[in-house]
Length: 300
Ligand code: PPS
Image (cartoon, rainbow, N blue to C red; front, side, top):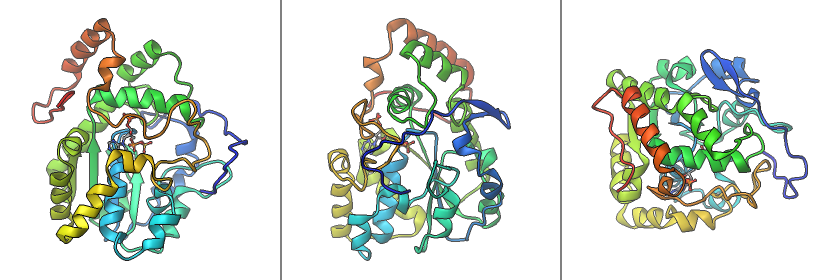
Protein backbone atom coordinates (compact mmCIF):
# COMPACT_ATOMS: atom_id res chain seq x y z
CA UNK A 1 0.00 0.00 0.00
CA UNK A 2 1.31 3.45 -0.82
CA UNK A 3 2.13 5.83 1.98
CA UNK A 4 -0.04 8.87 2.42
CA UNK A 5 1.51 10.90 5.23
CA UNK A 6 -1.06 13.68 5.04
CA UNK A 7 -3.92 11.23 5.18
CA UNK A 8 -6.03 13.74 3.27
CA UNK A 9 -7.98 11.30 1.15
CA UNK A 10 -9.74 9.23 3.76
CA UNK A 11 -11.81 6.44 2.24
CA UNK A 12 -15.55 6.24 2.86
CA UNK A 13 -16.48 3.92 5.71
CA UNK A 14 -17.50 0.42 4.64
CA UNK A 15 -21.12 -0.67 5.13
CA UNK A 16 -21.90 -4.13 6.43
CA UNK A 17 -23.80 -6.60 4.26
CA UNK A 18 -24.35 -10.32 4.30
CA UNK A 19 -21.77 -12.24 2.28
CA UNK A 20 -22.22 -16.02 2.23
CA UNK A 21 -23.70 -15.79 5.71
CA UNK A 22 -20.89 -13.57 7.09
CA UNK A 23 -21.04 -9.78 7.67
CA UNK A 24 -18.54 -8.07 5.42
CA UNK A 25 -17.81 -4.74 3.76
CA UNK A 26 -16.93 -4.26 0.13
CA UNK A 27 -13.27 -3.63 1.03
CA UNK A 28 -12.94 -7.38 1.60
CA UNK A 29 -15.19 -8.70 -1.16
CA UNK A 30 -14.46 -6.44 -4.18
CA UNK A 31 -11.62 -8.70 -5.28
CA UNK A 32 -13.40 -11.92 -4.40
CA UNK A 33 -12.80 -13.76 -7.64
CA UNK A 34 -9.04 -13.31 -7.32
CA UNK A 35 -9.17 -14.21 -3.63
CA UNK A 36 -11.07 -17.42 -4.24
CA UNK A 37 -8.85 -18.37 -7.19
CA UNK A 38 -5.66 -17.42 -5.36
CA UNK A 39 -2.92 -19.98 -6.04
CA UNK A 40 -1.14 -20.86 -2.84
CA UNK A 41 2.32 -22.43 -2.81
CA UNK A 42 3.16 -25.37 -0.58
CA UNK A 43 5.51 -23.28 1.57
CA UNK A 44 3.11 -20.35 2.01
CA UNK A 45 2.24 -19.65 5.64
CA UNK A 46 -1.21 -18.31 6.36
CA UNK A 47 -1.67 -16.23 9.52
CA UNK A 48 -5.38 -16.28 10.27
CA UNK A 49 -7.22 -14.40 13.00
CA UNK A 50 -10.46 -12.71 13.92
CA UNK A 51 -9.67 -8.97 13.67
CA UNK A 52 -7.77 -7.56 16.67
CA UNK A 53 -6.62 -10.91 18.06
CA UNK A 54 -2.86 -10.34 17.68
CA UNK A 55 -2.34 -10.66 13.93
CA UNK A 56 0.34 -7.99 13.71
CA UNK A 57 2.22 -9.37 16.69
CA UNK A 58 2.42 -12.89 15.26
CA UNK A 59 3.07 -11.59 11.73
CA UNK A 60 6.04 -9.65 13.01
CA UNK A 61 7.33 -12.62 15.01
CA UNK A 62 7.18 -14.85 11.92
CA UNK A 63 8.76 -12.20 9.74
CA UNK A 64 11.67 -11.89 12.16
CA UNK A 65 12.04 -15.65 12.49
CA UNK A 66 12.31 -16.08 8.73
CA UNK A 67 13.93 -12.87 7.55
CA UNK A 68 15.25 -11.01 10.61
CA UNK A 69 18.84 -12.13 10.14
CA UNK A 70 19.14 -11.98 6.38
CA UNK A 71 17.10 -9.06 5.11
CA UNK A 72 18.02 -6.12 7.33
CA UNK A 73 16.75 -3.46 4.94
CA UNK A 74 13.36 -5.13 5.01
CA UNK A 75 13.18 -4.50 8.76
CA UNK A 76 13.86 -0.78 8.45
CA UNK A 77 12.03 0.17 5.28
CA UNK A 78 9.01 -2.06 4.66
CA UNK A 79 5.97 -1.85 6.92
CA UNK A 80 4.71 -5.12 8.33
CA UNK A 81 1.44 -4.84 6.39
CA UNK A 82 3.45 -4.99 3.15
CA UNK A 83 5.75 -7.78 4.30
CA UNK A 84 2.76 -9.84 5.35
CA UNK A 85 -0.01 -8.74 2.98
CA UNK A 86 -3.68 -8.94 3.89
CA UNK A 87 -5.03 -11.33 1.27
CA UNK A 88 -8.66 -10.19 0.93
CA UNK A 89 -8.12 -6.45 1.39
CA UNK A 90 -8.87 -4.19 -1.57
CA UNK A 91 -7.95 -0.69 -0.38
CA UNK A 92 -8.97 2.33 -2.43
CA UNK A 93 -6.27 3.57 -4.83
CA UNK A 94 -3.66 0.96 -4.00
CA UNK A 95 -2.70 -2.61 -4.69
CA UNK A 96 -5.01 -5.41 -3.65
CA UNK A 97 -3.88 -8.02 -1.14
CA UNK A 98 -3.69 -10.69 -3.83
CA UNK A 99 -1.44 -8.48 -5.99
CA UNK A 100 0.82 -7.74 -3.04
CA UNK A 101 1.12 -11.43 -2.21
CA UNK A 102 1.76 -12.37 -5.83
CA UNK A 103 4.57 -9.80 -5.95
CA UNK A 104 6.25 -10.94 -2.75
CA UNK A 105 9.88 -11.82 -3.43
CA UNK A 106 10.20 -13.93 -0.28
CA UNK A 107 10.04 -17.62 0.32
CA UNK A 108 8.13 -18.57 2.30
CA UNK A 109 5.44 -16.01 1.70
CA UNK A 110 3.71 -14.89 4.90
CA UNK A 111 0.05 -14.09 4.26
CA UNK A 112 -2.51 -12.50 6.58
CA UNK A 113 -6.23 -13.26 6.51
CA UNK A 114 -9.25 -12.58 8.71
CA UNK A 115 -11.47 -14.96 6.77
CA UNK A 116 -13.59 -17.45 8.67
CA UNK A 117 -12.33 -20.94 7.94
CA UNK A 118 -15.06 -21.83 5.44
CA UNK A 119 -14.11 -18.88 3.18
CA UNK A 120 -10.36 -19.60 2.96
CA UNK A 121 -9.35 -20.12 -0.70
CA UNK A 122 -9.23 -23.82 -1.44
CA UNK A 123 -5.69 -23.91 -2.81
CA UNK A 124 -4.32 -23.36 0.73
CA UNK A 125 -5.87 -26.69 1.70
CA UNK A 126 -4.89 -28.38 -1.56
CA UNK A 127 -1.28 -27.27 -1.11
CA UNK A 128 -1.34 -28.43 2.50
CA UNK A 129 0.00 -25.04 3.66
CA UNK A 130 0.97 -24.35 7.23
CA UNK A 131 -1.45 -22.07 9.05
CA UNK A 132 -1.15 -20.19 12.31
CA UNK A 133 -4.43 -19.15 13.93
CA UNK A 134 -4.39 -16.62 16.77
CA UNK A 135 -7.43 -16.28 19.03
CA UNK A 136 -8.08 -13.71 21.75
CA UNK A 137 -10.69 -13.75 24.49
CA UNK A 138 -13.94 -12.21 23.28
CA UNK A 139 -14.11 -9.43 25.87
CA UNK A 140 -10.72 -7.89 25.11
CA UNK A 141 -11.19 -8.65 21.42
CA UNK A 142 -14.43 -6.66 21.44
CA UNK A 143 -12.87 -3.66 23.18
CA UNK A 144 -9.91 -3.62 20.81
CA UNK A 145 -12.28 -3.87 17.83
CA UNK A 146 -14.35 -0.95 19.12
CA UNK A 147 -11.33 1.36 19.29
CA UNK A 148 -10.12 0.13 15.91
CA UNK A 149 -13.46 0.83 14.23
CA UNK A 150 -13.37 4.31 15.73
CA UNK A 151 -9.97 5.16 14.28
CA UNK A 152 -9.94 3.23 10.98
CA UNK A 153 -12.03 5.06 8.41
CA UNK A 154 -12.41 1.96 6.23
CA UNK A 155 -14.34 0.22 9.00
CA UNK A 156 -18.09 0.63 9.59
CA UNK A 157 -19.12 3.41 12.00
CA UNK A 158 -18.74 1.83 15.45
CA UNK A 159 -21.59 3.81 17.03
CA UNK A 160 -21.51 4.14 20.80
CA UNK A 161 -20.10 1.44 23.06
CA UNK A 162 -23.52 0.03 24.08
CA UNK A 163 -24.53 -0.34 20.47
CA UNK A 164 -21.20 -1.90 19.53
CA UNK A 165 -21.44 -4.34 22.45
CA UNK A 166 -24.81 -5.57 21.17
CA UNK A 167 -23.59 -5.86 17.59
CA UNK A 168 -20.62 -7.94 18.71
CA UNK A 169 -22.92 -10.37 20.53
CA UNK A 170 -25.11 -10.53 17.42
CA UNK A 171 -22.10 -11.24 15.20
CA UNK A 172 -22.74 -8.14 13.11
CA UNK A 173 -19.08 -7.23 12.76
CA UNK A 174 -16.74 -7.22 9.79
CA UNK A 175 -15.72 -10.88 9.32
CA UNK A 176 -18.81 -11.99 11.18
CA UNK A 177 -19.28 -13.53 14.56
CA UNK A 178 -16.29 -13.96 16.88
CA UNK A 179 -17.98 -17.07 18.26
CA UNK A 180 -18.29 -18.70 14.81
CA UNK A 181 -14.77 -17.66 13.84
CA UNK A 182 -12.86 -19.09 16.81
CA UNK A 183 -15.01 -22.25 16.86
CA UNK A 184 -14.78 -22.82 13.12
CA UNK A 185 -10.99 -22.70 13.14
CA UNK A 186 -10.80 -24.78 16.32
CA UNK A 187 -12.90 -27.49 14.74
CA UNK A 188 -10.70 -27.45 11.64
CA UNK A 189 -7.68 -28.17 13.81
CA UNK A 190 -9.13 -31.58 14.60
CA UNK A 191 -8.85 -32.66 10.94
CA UNK A 192 -6.11 -30.46 9.47
CA UNK A 193 -2.77 -31.19 11.11
CA UNK A 194 -0.85 -28.24 9.69
CA UNK A 195 -2.78 -25.74 11.78
CA UNK A 196 -1.18 -24.22 14.89
CA UNK A 197 -3.88 -22.64 17.10
CA UNK A 198 -2.54 -20.15 19.59
CA UNK A 199 -3.92 -17.67 22.12
CA UNK A 200 -3.14 -13.98 22.62
CA UNK A 201 -3.27 -14.49 26.40
CA UNK A 202 -0.58 -17.18 26.20
CA UNK A 203 1.62 -14.84 24.18
CA UNK A 204 1.22 -12.15 26.84
CA UNK A 205 1.94 -14.64 29.61
CA UNK A 206 5.14 -16.04 28.09
CA UNK A 207 6.13 -14.80 24.66
CA UNK A 208 9.32 -16.89 24.60
CA UNK A 209 7.44 -20.12 25.30
CA UNK A 210 4.96 -19.36 22.51
CA UNK A 211 7.77 -18.55 20.08
CA UNK A 212 9.34 -21.92 20.94
CA UNK A 213 6.04 -23.65 20.13
CA UNK A 214 5.80 -21.74 16.85
CA UNK A 215 9.36 -22.75 15.94
CA UNK A 216 8.55 -26.36 16.70
CA UNK A 217 5.50 -26.19 14.42
CA UNK A 218 7.45 -24.46 11.65
CA UNK A 219 10.58 -26.60 11.96
CA UNK A 220 12.79 -23.61 12.83
CA UNK A 221 15.65 -23.53 15.31
CA UNK A 222 16.86 -19.97 15.93
CA UNK A 223 19.99 -19.51 18.01
CA UNK A 224 19.62 -18.31 21.61
CA UNK A 225 20.96 -14.89 20.55
CA UNK A 226 18.52 -14.64 17.66
CA UNK A 227 15.63 -15.57 19.90
CA UNK A 228 16.69 -12.95 22.42
CA UNK A 229 16.74 -10.29 19.71
CA UNK A 230 13.32 -11.31 18.42
CA UNK A 231 11.85 -11.26 21.93
CA UNK A 232 13.10 -7.71 22.42
CA UNK A 233 11.80 -6.50 19.04
CA UNK A 234 8.29 -7.85 19.61
CA UNK A 235 7.74 -6.37 23.07
CA UNK A 236 4.68 -4.11 22.99
CA UNK A 237 6.54 -0.84 23.61
CA UNK A 238 9.15 -1.61 20.97
CA UNK A 239 6.51 -2.43 18.38
CA UNK A 240 4.52 0.65 19.36
CA UNK A 241 7.59 2.81 18.72
CA UNK A 242 8.56 1.06 15.50
CA UNK A 243 7.07 2.82 12.48
CA UNK A 244 7.45 -0.36 10.44
CA UNK A 245 5.30 -2.30 12.93
CA UNK A 246 2.84 0.24 14.35
CA UNK A 247 0.74 1.07 11.26
CA UNK A 248 1.55 4.80 11.56
CA UNK A 249 2.08 4.90 7.79
CA UNK A 250 -1.25 3.26 6.96
CA UNK A 251 -3.46 5.81 5.22
CA UNK A 252 -6.93 5.18 6.65
CA UNK A 253 -6.10 5.30 10.37
CA UNK A 254 -6.42 8.33 12.62
CA UNK A 255 -4.07 7.90 15.56
CA UNK A 256 -5.48 11.04 17.18
CA UNK A 257 -8.60 8.96 17.86
CA UNK A 258 -6.72 5.84 18.99
CA UNK A 259 -3.32 4.32 18.18
CA UNK A 260 -3.14 0.93 16.48
CA UNK A 261 -0.89 -0.34 19.28
CA UNK A 262 -3.33 0.75 21.93
CA UNK A 263 -2.93 -1.12 25.25
CA UNK A 264 -1.69 -4.62 24.45
CA UNK A 265 -3.14 -6.12 27.64
CA UNK A 266 -5.34 -8.89 28.94
CA UNK A 267 -8.24 -7.59 31.04
CA UNK A 268 -8.68 -4.09 29.60
CA UNK A 269 -12.34 -5.06 29.05
CA UNK A 270 -12.94 -4.38 32.75
CA UNK A 271 -12.56 -0.66 32.04
CA UNK A 272 -15.31 -0.83 29.40
CA UNK A 273 -17.90 -3.42 30.41
CA UNK A 274 -20.57 -2.35 32.88
CA UNK A 275 -21.57 -4.91 35.52
CA UNK A 276 -24.86 -5.47 33.65
CA UNK A 277 -23.05 -5.92 30.33
CA UNK A 278 -20.69 -8.41 31.88
CA UNK A 279 -23.61 -10.47 33.19
CA UNK A 280 -25.40 -10.34 29.85
CA UNK A 281 -22.20 -11.27 28.06
CA UNK A 282 -21.47 -14.26 30.32
CA UNK A 283 -25.02 -15.61 29.95
CA UNK A 284 -24.91 -15.32 26.19
CA UNK A 285 -21.37 -16.76 26.05
CA UNK A 286 -22.44 -19.96 27.81
CA UNK A 287 -25.11 -20.52 25.17
CA UNK A 288 -22.76 -19.94 22.23
CA UNK A 289 -19.55 -21.61 23.44
CA UNK A 290 -20.54 -25.22 23.97
CA UNK A 291 -17.23 -26.94 23.18
CA UNK A 292 -15.50 -27.60 26.53
CA UNK A 293 -12.14 -28.13 24.78
CA UNK A 294 -11.96 -24.49 23.66
CA UNK A 295 -11.24 -22.32 26.70
CA UNK A 296 -10.28 -18.64 26.88
CA UNK A 297 -8.80 -16.62 29.70
CA UNK A 298 -10.18 -13.11 30.29
CA UNK A 299 -7.49 -12.40 32.88
CA UNK A 300 -4.09 -13.84 33.63
S1 PPS B 1 -5.66 -6.25 13.02
O1 PPS B 1 -6.09 -4.87 12.63
O2 PPS B 1 -6.81 -7.17 13.05
O3 PPS B 1 -4.58 -6.76 12.21
O4 PPS B 1 -5.17 -6.08 14.53
P1 PPS B 1 -4.31 -7.16 15.34
O5 PPS B 1 -2.89 -6.97 15.03
O6 PPS B 1 -4.90 -8.50 15.17
O7 PPS B 1 -4.60 -6.75 16.85
C1 PPS B 1 -4.20 -5.52 17.40
C2 PPS B 1 -4.16 -5.73 18.90
O8 PPS B 1 -2.98 -6.47 19.23
C3 PPS B 1 -2.20 -5.70 20.14
N1 PPS B 1 -0.77 -5.95 19.97
C4 PPS B 1 0.03 -6.37 20.96
N2 PPS B 1 -0.23 -6.70 22.24
C5 PPS B 1 0.83 -7.06 23.01
N3 PPS B 1 2.09 -7.11 22.57
C6 PPS B 1 2.40 -6.79 21.29
N4 PPS B 1 3.65 -6.83 20.87
C7 PPS B 1 1.33 -6.41 20.41
N5 PPS B 1 1.26 -6.03 19.12
C8 PPS B 1 -0.03 -5.77 18.86
C9 PPS B 1 -2.59 -4.26 19.82
O9 PPS B 1 -2.18 -3.38 20.82
C10 PPS B 1 -4.10 -4.42 19.67
O10 PPS B 1 -4.74 -4.66 20.92
P2 PPS B 1 -5.34 -3.51 21.87
O11 PPS B 1 -6.07 -4.24 22.96
O12 PPS B 1 -6.26 -2.69 21.05
O13 PPS B 1 -4.18 -2.75 22.40
